[in-house]
View 1: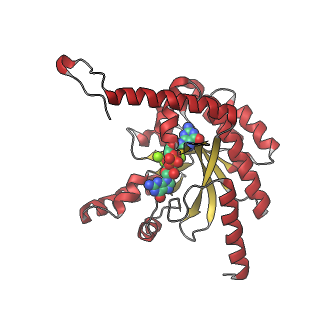
View 2: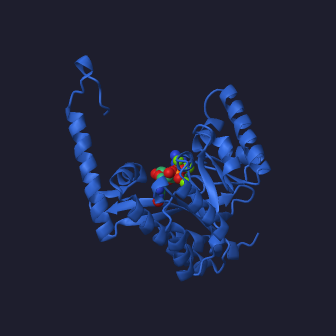
View 3: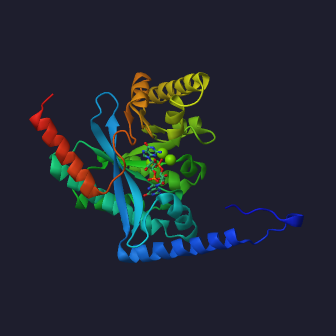
Length: 291
Ligand code: C2E
Ligand code: MG
Ligand code: MG
Ligand code: MG
């Protein structure tokens, strides 16, 4: 429920606001307890090549796994964590787990081929980040080339020299930078020019409108995606489509020249145990049934 302006523009404090305040306080407590009790997890969602459907990487998605309340998605947590300043500690925890998971996957499949994409909030770009990340990668024998830093325009819009310096350092270190939720913000195109972006992630709203709405809407969506793809490729970026839920969307995106994709069609995000089991099944199936 949203706050509504009452008579004379005064804010009426109603029950829904009390609920909101209470829920907020509850979440703040979950965050603190979660950090103490190790409830934060990095779930993984595969990113596949749209040509052959093979996994090229994984996106780490934060989950708070409350022992009684169950899973809490990042949408409820991140905004509050940013305001209260706990996002840094949460981010460190998720990064640590995600890199461990990538190491476990490499151990299972015996390759160093897949990459790991991690989401970062603007507030996580502290000067210590490159050093912290380097130490983690060294510890788990992972090369920086396998790490993708996912940021949104919000990070770049800050126009903060410290953030830019950190991004530049991460890029020079070998990590790639992905611009997430592309196409939903304000002046996206100029960022491709001013920052070392390697990957453009087309927002899932574009994928959705490929196969819903009128024929005209669908046609325009195809044009938009094609345009983003062309510009991105010309800038030397790889293009990833988010939110692929149907075979039709997959085929359309492939025809539009989008390189990679992720979505429920291929796999939902899942905890590392589930992901390792899925990968093991896949490799067994391949061994029994070589293409
Ligand atoms: P995002 O980075 O754009 O991540 C994609 C979101 O789409 C994820 O939601 C994912 O579960 C969801 N998704 C994936 N495939 C499909 C699909 O086929 N259909 C639909 N409808 N949704 C799909 P999630 O996990 O709830 O994360 C939401 C947002 O929270 C992320 O958006 C990202 O901005 C943020 N986030 C997630 N983890 C972290 C983190 O560790 N740190 C920070 N700072 N932000 C994070
Ligand atoms: Mg992301
Ligand atoms: Mg996204
Ligand atoms: Mg998003």
